[in-house]
Length: 521
Image 1 (cartoon, rainbow, N blue to C red):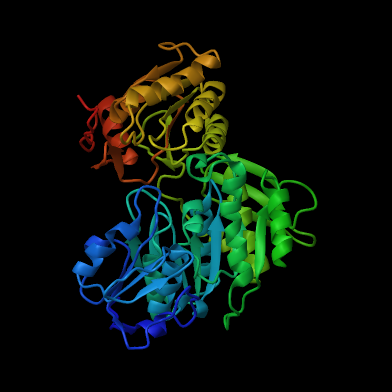
Image 2: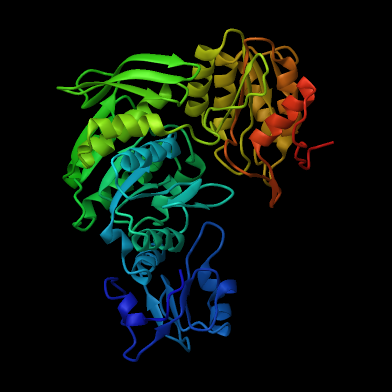
């Protein structure tokens, strides 16, 4: 979306500052947070990150023709206006919304956060909205869907930056969309990327062990997720019919703390789960090779639900979507049934790869201890034989989960193959050694029930060579992602392509060429 210049005072009309706006007119051609991208007339925001302080690059931004500056440090004697703000990330989100005309104020906005299941729940809600005949859009860590247009949102996935989010929302308004469902990661919430999204409905899937390297501990992680409900509580009134509600997983560890936080925001809370007393409950769950059937029950309703999604944990994701669409939007049970049934599956989420082999191969994004646990639990239900798990753990990320994930696999899988998953600048051998120790601590025997195969393509091929009739091979950790990071370089990678290539080799049938990585021989 191309936008003409904006007047500085117009952009800051709703943003409090620690000093005054200039008395004269300043035209802004664009908003940038990287000084290298500044062009004449741009407003440059100096943001303090974990490794880089944007204030150090103010001279570079000025030399490139910036028209004004925003930072959190006290003003200096700069030749162009400098606006001091308390939180430049929050200002960035608000500026992005102002730049695009505050698009979220014209939309009913549903936010979904949690450790696992966010993307699936976002897609379930989107399909229910479409089944109800609503003009609906979607912004997830995988893609943005605007009418018939599907846009990738990046290689390695988190909530897009504020300017991108607001641009997507503006495009949706332009396309006549009235409802949008947005996936909000903990990083996206903590870094204020979704600050100006005017959420009406907040949904939590679960909050388990993840990103402690960034948030410090579980409490810090939970508080980052809970920011979604502050945003719901503070959002503007909408012309689109929508109820301000919070939708919580009553089966999850986060439930008591989140319920207290939501009460402080004055929001109505609706619970879902498997226990009695919740607003939306699942009963009579049947987990089959072609999907799941269950009964959705409320205080006065019992409705049969069928989904093509695999794994009993996806029942919770379905219930989360039901809560948002029923309590928040008042959609009909027919629309809810139809929308859940219409979703064929999510790329890289329990995705079946079938080339006629007599065992089941599934590619899943599971990259946390809890996600791996529920994925392997689902695999055990679908298996007539053994469960073979292939996974790794990322470098420069939460190190504790390496051992935890390995322990989960040692307890739940029959065979475990440890391999690469974005080692980045860490030693891959070192990461695998930490994971191997987790299996050893649970009684695993290397070379008998677990192996280290550093090359991911080789590990997948190794697992398929082990597979026998009735087994389930679970390839976890990358899912839909299309690259893998070694050092500081992203190499093209897709687990689904790798599985197809390995199956072709094992079965002696045509298949794509195996992608190569630095570990490939």
